[in-house]
Length: 389
Image 1 (cartoon, rainbow, N blue to C red):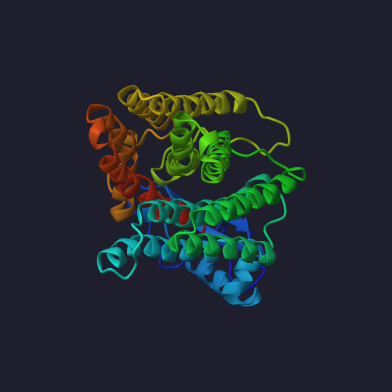
Image 2: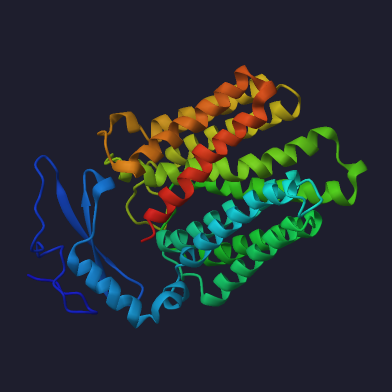
């Protein structure tokens, strides 16, 4: 029986192979049909090599009609897809963060931008991807109402304000606004969680740890600026590590474990039947994620205590252990174009970067930038953005 899209009447690819699609040898194609936000259905073509996956014509047709029915771009944002607004804002925020350095060299600005650059990149650039992805994906995963347009615009305005304050050297007020925006985002999702119809993937335990790290880390930074004599040297360093590394590293591990196996055509240990209670096996996966996350946090403690080599080494072990178990990409077929290469580089770069820091701790800051560029920043737009469309 043919199933037709509710919006444009085009036969659904789940039941009707599309004219012009030829299956390659040794490649398994299957179609999935998902309900979209407007009451219609969208079709997706998936292969055992998801790098090369593309939508059939019916999907493009229905998606175009869906955009029109929802009022175009802003309609899509309004029905619970905040990533469409926040991802481009993230790119602009990253450009601002990088631009601070040449502006200082050209003597346009007088303040050395070390702190401002770091804050813009973490609290602005990377936060746009964290909030955009979680704000879009998490409500779908647990079956709760999606973010409204007002909520999305409020978060976007807050993130723009953070970038502006940090770029202008108003570090304290930028940190306060970041604490407020991230806290509000947690409250918005937390309130919805009481209505959930499903449990999140167990790897999202790491996402929760990462967001908690950011809140604690920025709170320490605020106290440090208001009452510097109250904060010991240990907590100064701990706050920086939680904000600059824990906030990004832990969610990247968790989201990567959930999404990356699909890109590499591997079975995912994060898929469980829909259930309001915890399905069998969920606690074991979540426990493993929690242990690896605890190892990463423990490495921060060692580094804050001055044990740099041991801290970096433990961090590399924790990240490597988790990624190699949850994303055994070495089993996947080679290929996948630039996206496949980018993901492999990111997976190798993160634990390898920390391992190199353990060998040469005196150059840790330089190698940390390599981890940010080739690991964290590379995976956000490529990995998170591709799964939203």
